[in-house]
Length: 480
Image (tube, rainbow, N blue to C red; front, top):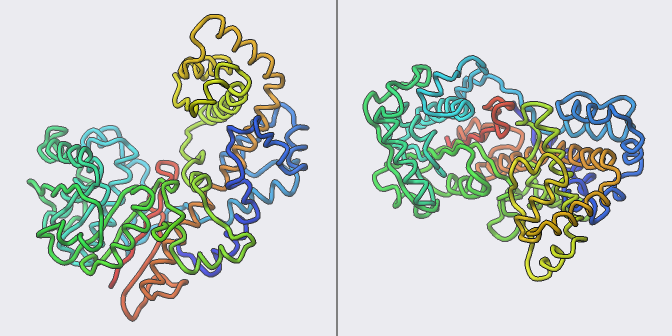
């Protein structure tokens, strides 16, 4: 997957600017209390309201990637078409220069998961990412590989086995995670979890450690100025790596460390949790590049990504396995929006909200069956449904409000799906900004992946199967 930033970014930002209300203009739980439906385009509202029993199935078809029905107005169909056309492709293609292989669906099975002590998803991720890491480390003649935000060390431990001649560091800012990684390492490397690691995980490795290449565990905040001191004995050629490093860690923190720390020769990162990216202040994680910042400022008002819009980059329906799960998620949105309306009209809850912010949090599965069960369970958790009389009053209030359940459900489902369609556009913008930032700082032309004169490179590739791991893109940058 290659992309020319100067031709890819302008139409993408223009599209997001046009539909910025869908990005950042509402929270779906305010559907009833803020009358969100009245703010939707009239033609779009009419389409939903005039639809028949087939509408939900048509909507789920769209979620699964099918074309919008021809009976829907051109404006909706064009919106869906553009939202799919403008983001980066998610197709995995072989790239021998980065040791990215074609997808092999039958490669991982329950037995290999047992031997590796990982879930199917995690095994898929660390198998494919570790090969890229080992390839880059070998190319850079790295002394050390540093897994930043290592967590429980799934990637760390495999990379250590594949790179017996290199020191591998597991770095995390939280002591309990460092301890968890160390504990897992003792069990995995010591053979307690399994008798042998799956052979395919070690294919093509030039320095497999048959015994123990135990990682060095470090609890520290990443800082380009102090990194060499924190990693005492690491040598002078590092490769920074991260698997689903959260928010700013995979962006401004790791990228600046790569650029500003002389010892770091390359970086290999798969990002995640974009809602944790800061968007204000001197250390903002978006936008990082001057190019993207300039594009955003061309609009009036300037296009900005907030916490709410960045959340879209991760909260899509890509990981849902079947229609039943999607229907359940959409029904949950309806229940939560209706609960908000109930809380405004139910006296005990309204009185409580005057003294404290109401936070419901998670509810038991039994609360998902119907709206009344959901409302009662939520109010019990809030402490405002503690008698039979109050429960009866709640159920009566729900019956009086739920006058058009099918119609309400269609409208909320439509808004949820249309908004989620923008998720890949937001993620693409964040990732392209990071690539543009790297190319600017490395003096690589924006539309080139490599500067042939210096050997510097900054590329973005699809690495994981999107259906298995939706945050599937890896950023790889090398100083030479």
